[in-house]
Image (cartoon, rainbow, N blue to C red; front, side):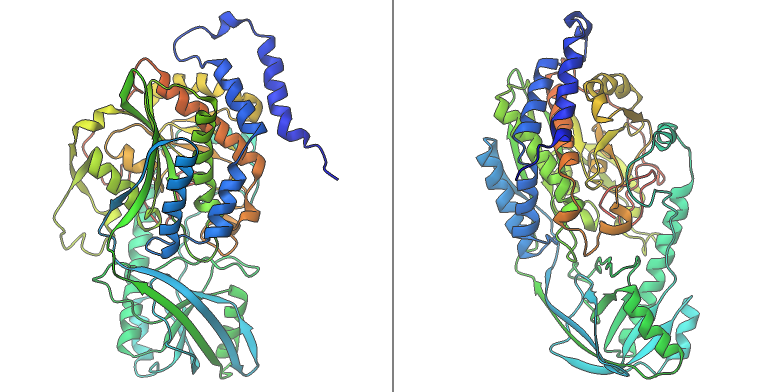
Length: 555
């Protein structure tokens, strides 16, 4: 028996009732949205949504989408063909790179042989080596606070499986354990905060990277067999990312696994009590080195009288490999694809061309969107590497002069979605004060969906930064955090079941409306003044939290 879902249709009913009570003259004026089109967008998005079908194909049928893997290429091709099916024009794959190696995990087994027999839950880091068949060895516990601690293990690790206990970075995200933003939290988010927190995050990242690099080099020199680290989180969650060995000048190194903290804890307690532990590992990974290039999926709805100008929307198509990339960022991809499907289904005729971009390489540092922006719109001059910056990842290095291409002036705005499955609650202005009165009008028809918050704050960590960095207005929406940071972000539980259908339907409707409004404006979206690059300004911290709550997925 089917049950009628009141929540699905209640927002539309409330909106239509409200609209009927407001005189049409109230909607006249610059940047007031066309409420007839808004109503049509809501009807199509709430009554005929395909957002969960899109997400199911990405997650259940294609699966994980690690950049460089066969699966991400399948996702590129599938999204290209699906956008063509929706009626978009010029759907194609656009190369960027060079990226380096591809990688996939084909089989992982970790088994305790002594003092008990037990299956243990672990997965390899992306771009780490395999074991070349099942291997057995004793386990050694390596507890490290600094590089100076390594000397005591010299000569003790050859042929051993090493349990690595390193200090954990702490960023103090300040997010709720799970769920929705409260009104108080949204009020706090509106208040702009001048903070030096980014510098402390930068220092933590550089310190952690240096120690990890020193430990890895030491273990290789000592000829250890494999390494195992504890995952953050609990209840069997595995938060797994990767190494930098996607770069062809970086050696993959030892087999490196991340283990559920409960299983890691058992091994650690045994070793601390001087109880010998023996494990059997069988890790089968595959590298792909035939094609250095990776690809973004691009398609568009052609404009009319302003067709040479662009409004863009997008999200990142790639994911990590432990789950199926549902909330990071299959949700965002499904929403932006659904948004353009809605507009095509309505047969709208936008003045500006609407272009969708589905980016790869986001998890490795916004590489796909940066490559696209550099090829079409401009880039920052890369400064010479100095002793002070040699150990920094590229995204933390200072950049030079902004070098723009002519088409940079033709992009009105870019809208991004990459904060998980939560409903849209508003938008980050990225310090673009001139956009605030425009967005206030565009959000007004969605107050019944609780999308009311506009903040001057920056948010970091995802692909809108690639556009913002070349002074194209780039925006990321505020979304309810749900259990993104605590359960799904880069974890084995980033799967379809963690996605909220109603929230994604609402997000697609709001995204479609924003993109349509931007495409129909008489003028381009207002821009911030071009500023000289400052190391503290607009810095993407991939692998780290955002400067504001609910940071994006590329961390």
